[in-house]
Image 1 (cartoon, rainbow, N blue to C red):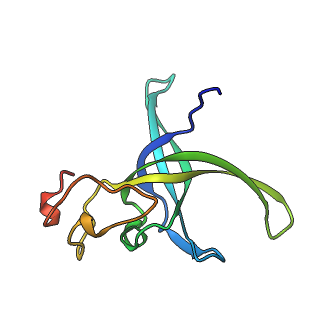
Image 2 (cartoon, one colour):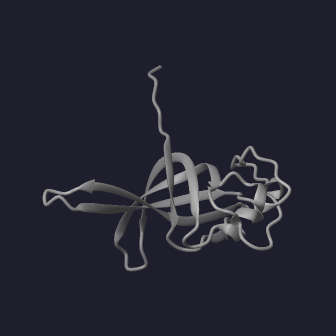
Length: 140
């Protein structure tokens, strides 16, 4: 059997608040977009920023993530690429490349009202390896 690898790691900012819906089997599906920016020096000597948008999908995310996946927040996302096609409401065939999330780590404090990351448990997403009593103890 040949070796293969399908792994993607991103650090970026959410472009919109996450949306959660449920399948007929009561599995929660949370989707959001994340932007990454690549900077390089152009031919004219000025820096050029290229922003790429990535569609992300997480299954059975905890309520912590559903509440904190807000526009502008910075997250580390790790997962695998998947491709799908579908027919839109106008009957046109569309294609989409998505990231199915395996690991999701917030890179900013959760904001007011959040006490710690240890309360955020999910069966499909790994949590940060930090145990904190308050947001001031976070390493980021």
